[in-house]
Image (spheres, rainbow, N blue to C red):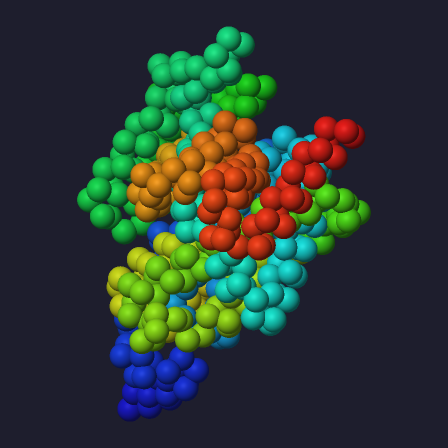
Length: 458
């Protein structure tokens, strides 16, 4: 009797906070949905630390920062918007952070964190001023789809590099790597396994694919095929323990650098973060909300302002903790498919991220060749937006093509956005279609051209 009474009180509390009956759901369904969402996006805990470590950041600290950013952002979504969406440092955005801002443009990771922080603050301000829709509507749909597809190509290229599937070549710049190498072979095998799991619609397929590839690597080490060689970047795949206290975030927390905040190059970096985050978040919110039947009669999401605020809070907090832009995950659709309809789903997902803090030895022991399949398959998923681009209309298709192809070839998400924006404005303005170009696009095109001129003169 006491247990039943306690359960009734707990359900009453959950009902009051998350309005379960109003959203035609119950606590059991929401818990299952929350766990499902965690399983489908937990791969970020293995991928993000390894990627940001390439920029010189402490890998263990990044793991903890990734978890904390996910927890803060997801809890904000749960309690501010009461939506079943989870957040974590975004794929593509972390690649831009490392491979463009740090390794190509030469900024330190501290300055890159400063750009993420500024982007988060701007996002918060835009949310309160209700101008996010205006910015969203300023960009043509073709460029929005092209950016998503281009990022997919970019992170797939990074996955190929991490796996050794492609390598540098003096004559052709890029060539096929040694596919018989144990690391490359395992990465290719892992990609095929992950692809099969995705085709079979196995929940958590990307995380499972990472773990299977990792286990195959351990077996290869035990039989002597994979030989640890720290000097060559090959470390033992067998963790010394399964559980431990969370790694300290002291090496990266609150280390952001705002000294370049007034430079034009810094503006372009911040804009690229903001652009991708804004459209990725809105696209995810609209898509997943539509799947869940949460949109109103006009096709709008009732609490979109609170949802965007949660995203901005996650990004700002994540920058302070020491990680790249935090965004709403499309993998939240897996929890929605399980019946998740309220913030309780997000709350449960956040709880599982907290639990994951104590399993850092496992996540940190996962090598780059085991996470490469995740990059490749996620890249495939992001490339699907290319099907929404109307290539038969050249004034739309050419800028979209230039945007998506420039990202992997120029090794920069930002340059892809620049190519797409400038070409869209120039082509349409000269061919008599200037009226369809939003004024904001003209302003940005001028700023981007000035950037190139200043960099050239400098």
